[in-house]
Length: 168
Image (cartoon, rainbow, N blue to C red; front, side):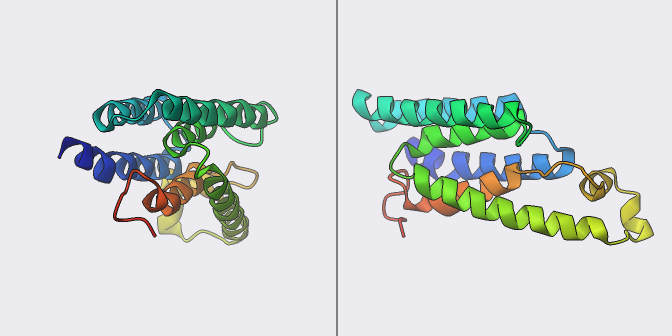
């Protein structure tokens, strides 16, 4: 019962929080990535995941962390995005990592195109008073890529072993 609660609620709730946080503040808290990692480890204990399987999940998370921090060092993504992607890869392991990365790339591309178009439009006065809308509207501003990462994670999650009986 406890494991089912973690499987059904923790990961999706943290992903939704990551997306909304990035949208509203353009930041993803380190605590959120740590909560994802901690939740993964609690679930591995509760479900009895084998050490070799845990090792593969750790390797996937580490690989994504290294690549994502390479992207961060080039200014292509934010540090919070890098940590979120790595924590998510920890949950998915190599079995679902490619699907996650493809979805994240596609969703990120669409998000970027939508933001570019949005930034070309004049803002109505009632929206111009909202600080988070102004950040999104700022020409040359960043892209809250955590939205794409969270969307991709939520698209892939039902297909994982964490959701037996719910896989598509």
